[in-house]
Image (cartoon, rainbow over all chains, first blue to last red; front, side, top):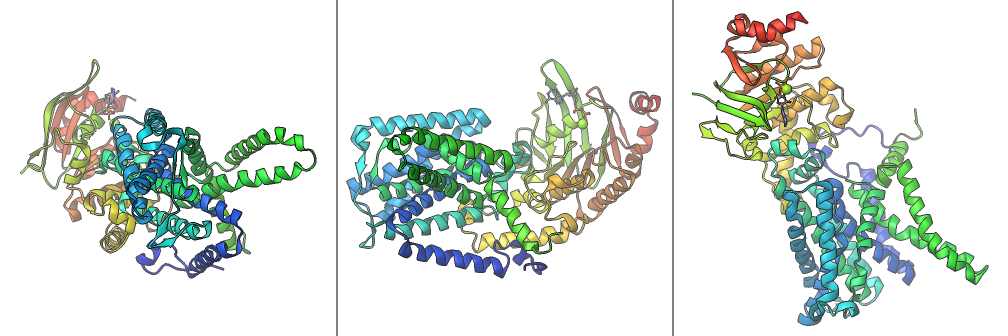
Length: 347
Length: 257
Ligand SMILES: Nc1ncnc2c1ncn2[C@@H]1O[C@H](COP(=O)(O)OP(=O)(O)O)[C@@H](O)[C@H]1O
Ligand SMILES: [Mg+2]
């Protein structure tokens, strides 16, 4: 029961986690995340790691697209930039993981700033096409800048380590990913407690009056591109170190679209929604695959039909979902919470 | 000393002359009204002052500076705030966030400190919250809606929130485009009271476009009349009301309807 917790001070009202109950749940979540790798098998840990990477990437894209209203089709390419940066710095210069991680973000952010520069003049679909161009150009670069990227063969990475502690196994790397995802989520949540985040949302809602409010549109659009591609770059670095290989195939246009789908399904302009969306888009296809896989026992031939069917079902699921809940999983969650807050006094 | 001066403003869109050589000056502490029939060019004047339109000719001076070529965001930072004829709130945000947004140009938190939300950034937000609560939300009597999304509010309340946001900008001059249009008598009276209070208690000069002649007569100090993009009369409310051109162009037209 959480009725009637009266906010006495403004500070309490401004806090993100307003009640003890919420903090308790958060603590339990933290505990569950900490225990998870010790009880889960290798496959589940791998899935968790992939999901964690997706959370970092999705939060980044949501800052740019969901909160600031700048649609990007180049998110995967920025992840690629981060992944290649970390692979090249690791294999050529022998830099440690703790250095390549932020550097991947920085290099990707620089690319993001360049791609974001036309946002000064372009809006909506036009800007979207500019980001698509960036995706294509970067993709091309990954394949053809052989001397740096080794083309389609890609680059193999040694297992990462921190202060001599090897992170070779999925279990150890799990903690790195969870920590980073938590930091990314917290940092992005913080943005929206200050004038920077308000400026982002103002630009999305009404850019003309935002400017009349004294917001420098260009600067804040660049900030959004910077934050977004920085996070994409770090996600790319995590992915590279998780898979221990980087090839151009890891960062196709399709992945950019998948990230857009994540934040739409999860909830545009919602930090929590980015997390939900990342989980949904990573876990649901996997569940579909393994449950359809069970049918394989009946008739080995059946997979020929089931494999494409899996994609169709997933696509349908997204469409149906968006028809019934256009504001995404985050909105569903909010309603569920509202229901339980008043429960059992529904009326 | 003049606070705001519009000098010889001429604006055209394509072949359409919207403003021709409009000039006037606003003294500090005035409630300065711009009246005229629909399509006369009143909103365009405010758009030029705010920097949203660039006039082909003429200059605008604010606080002894020529601001003709200054960007809208910097004009806002200098102390020009604006409310709109068609409410221009940020619909995705709560009332509180909309108001806080008005203070944007006066805040300092940068991107990096916003990511951390620690120390100065946090103090700044708390201070902002306290001030917004005490000097704006209480003043405009909107405590009960502070956490509601603006899209869900009634029209009159939205107008009030827009005023709140403009006040948060700590303006020297407040540009108001038809602040009571579409309001009922009670809401209009409230708004007139707020405007007078703002002028008297906060040292804010008000430039206001309005159709409500009663309100103009009651609260304005100086009135400019525009028609077909030209200034046709200026003076205090009494003088303007009896000006033959005005009777013909504006009041007369109203009476005929
Ligand atoms: N951005 C614009 N493009 C073209 N014409 C415009 C634009 N803004 C205003 N106008 C024209 O200028 C004239 C004056 O408009 P406006 O300033 O809105 O009048 P008022 O506020 O006095 O009703 C109208 O004829 C209008 O169509
Ligand atoms: Mg108008």
